[in-house]
Image (cartoon, rainbow, N blue to C red; front, side, top):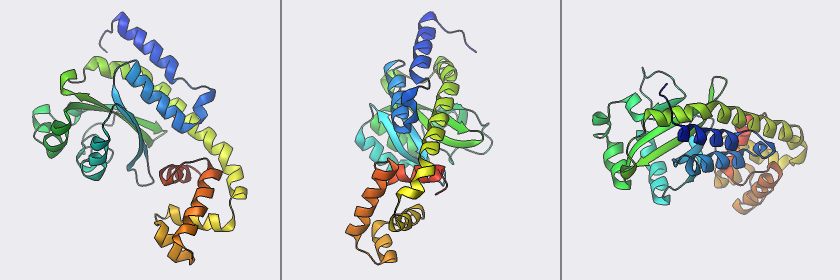
Length: 251
């Protein structure tokens, strides 16, 4: 491991303090926001904190200092070309909690890819680094760091700084997920009406509101009303958060 400067160690200590598990950490969304803010404010890293759906696909990013248009185009087109996204990492690349682009392919090769030419170049990016959050052997979250051209590439010092934080982030993230599950699971079944349980089951199957309405012979507006009640009872704000919660509990 490279030797770090006193200034870098000071940042690491501040970072460890800010990402530590505390009474606010049981709210998973708030905890992810805390990590995103820490990485940006303490280390200057533009970053996104993703969850994963049941199929292992990236979803529900919390991010800072990233253009909405950049996020939209990533979701619409370029997530399938991102060499650090789960499922895209080439076979043979060793599993590691932190990966840089050059760990996957030489930079001269990367800059010729469609992802680099049509996405990175257009939005001024030059490099990215992935941080992979596990619950035992299951990948449950991904933090993506990106650098603009004027900032230069990520260095081994950047990797080493993150290396000091990752176990604390992983532990707090999983503890927050477990607390959320333990608090919600025993009471969710009793809170939901029979109709709401039917709708939750269909949401879990990936059906859209129109399809749910047709399956249950009710209007789309009625489906939306029931879903809003489900969101409120389960403490989530949208379908994405509901899907993540359902993937973590047995309902």
